[in-house]
Length: 75
Image (cartoon, rainbow, N blue to C red; front, top):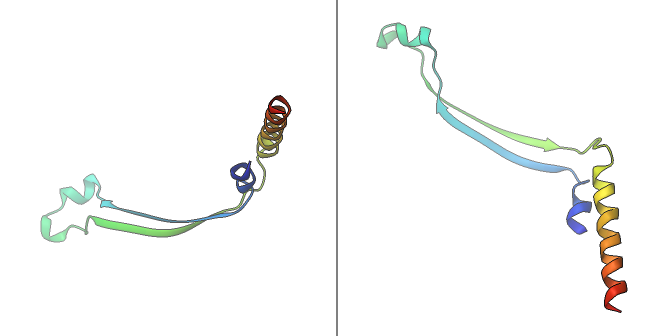
């Protein structure tokens, strides 16, 4: 249930990517005139839950009922 509640919290992620970036036009020119093909990117991603059609609240209430049922059957 705690994990379901955390779905409503904003998350911050650090993302990165590296690789070779080229085009056919770049490969056709002589080697000395080519643009560099090695590239990278780094960024920060902030995700704020805005609207999820009630899926988180539904999952939370479903888990609450399951816990209540288990408590009822164990007592």
